[in-house]
Image (cartoon, rainbow, N blue to C red; front, top):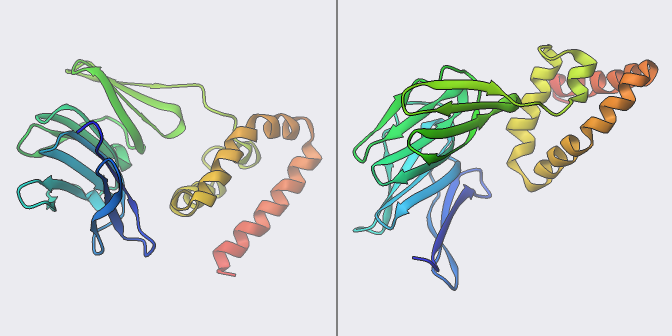
Length: 228
């Protein structure tokens, strides 16, 4: 297994695709009429899962060399999957959704939050972390889940409009629903957060420039709302 691998993602038509690496070449294992996939993880050749949009969970069926849909019990997008073994795995995603796999089925875990979760990892079953929106970090000791917030990167949009404004909500939607779905968009996001601290410092010290930037963004959002 050391020279083999797998990857999941989105095909050119917006559908999901799973590709396999055998040590020499990549080949498509699953694709076509399946939802977009966000993450893949396996405890071994017999226990490999991929997760994605609309609560999609797919499991590799080694005996038939095929990927089967598995019930998740949720319609929320699942953005990550990870585990300790084939009987102890976690998947997480939108609206604070966390699912646990015990080797037989996926069952919901109460996260206590409604934010999106983008990653999950642990050093042991009693020391598990999940990370999500706005610097949110969850930690589970196997019994309870605690929530903390890391120091977030300064955000120019929040400085201009306020953290909970309609404009910021729409800009976040553009980021997550549009920009994240392409390599070019992901680069735009990376550059935005790279330069955000500098831009925030400049805007804080120049109210006139801050107002000018707001007018430009207002016009952009108005154009998007009208469909032009």
